[in-house]
Length: 112
Length: 111
Image (spheres, chains in turn red, cyan):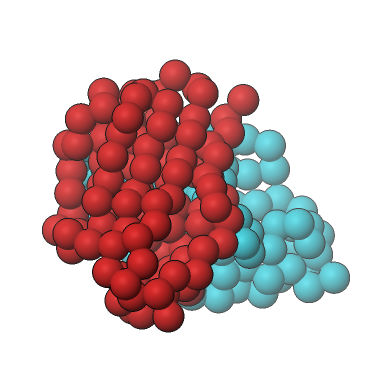
């Protein structure tokens, strides 16, 4: 089983809203990731968690706040987003940061 | 920053023909590469990987070739099928802590 589950699949929010994206994996992976992907572009790394600790933050604006409650779950809290933040947000996991990453289907986010 | 890139953004092939998707990387210290396939509305899906101590690796209908001399790798898909239509990304694990994705090549299979 190489499944990474993301919810919701679609999200529409206003610039003053607060929402959260969720990601779950039950493969025993110890590294989890958030990526942002714009149309016709490659995924761009946002955050890396290794053993439930934030190890990489790619200079992401503070309106994006990641959280790793346990080794199976990864959240991305959203607050005061801008329309340019509209994108596909992908979660991935891997055994370690040196191994193959397995991706979820993503959350399609629209900020109005 | 990113160290991988692709030569061609789009590729069209006839069903049944072989497809070749290319990727160039800039840092000779890169030692691990992965090819991903991303279909419309889905997340990237692992296809095949190769480490720098290898020149070639084969999977089911796919082969990855690595030429370290010119810092180039390619993905070959045999007997391309309509289900192979997707965007293909190469990714490079240069730092050992994260993968950098190349630009992507959109493959269209013509029935």
